[in-house]
Length: 235
Image (cartoon, rainbow, N blue to C red; front, side, top):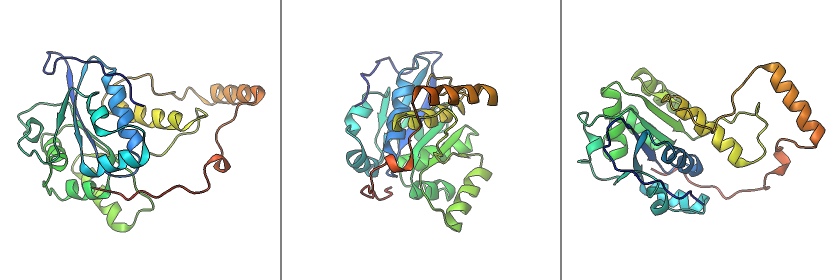
């Protein structure tokens, strides 16, 4: 369930504009959580694009939908609206986040194939030398996937596979999602309460001992369901 939105007037002076795109790759929870966190930051104006593939993945993987997620953004743009403000470099933003990013979207960005608003906005972000972060959710990777990531990196983008951290001893899937989303937003200079930060090995060891003493433990592989229904990586 998504949070109740905090409504603000778009275009208010002093607010930072961040474009967020949710595509059809598995991992829709990352995109939902990113929009939730940004909604709680009064200094950020969020422009959201949700692809058709993402709408399907939201239905497969979450209990929310595109309409509910859209209410958390300041402005929602349609995937096929290539005349939207974010399609132009003259519309100033502080960067763009694609979370999760499908391989199709990665390929579009790497090859400047601007056939939808997500890829066009990402292309604009790169040409204007703004921050572009792609949370590519795919594994395993073959050589062409890696080459696409290299192309985007060479153009100035940042590839952030959602690899979970475990030093903070996550107890739930939400803990893992929150940590990843918080670290992604760090790349935009946005400090949130989502990140449990590394404070040295001694502090970590004390925390681990305390958890063992209390009987708490991190999730183990055997805790997961034996089989999950596969979701295709959409556009």
